[in-house]
Image (cartoon, rainbow, N blue to C red):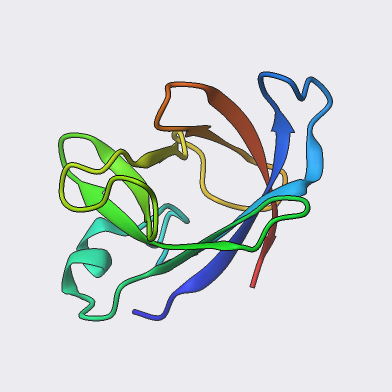
Length: 123
């Protein structure tokens, strides 16, 4: 199943009550018929699904999408201080709604801070 790039922009969170379009994630996902990330497609795809974190005045951080049936979706970023299977991950929760522009996703950083991101594009 082909992947699409879901673009998320910070809608609100600690230190950003009004959000910030300069704080973004670009996540490659395959979506199922309901418009939600497809765990079966992820498991069947031999190519890792790409993810990027974009912050102002910093180089984009590269990573890949991970899925665990018990814990859901997350992003593993390369080059972080702790790597390997026990490395902290950035979790993202799409909720029950399909991923489409205007919907929100909760992103939880490894330290536990949760941020709301709005889907601003699907390419």
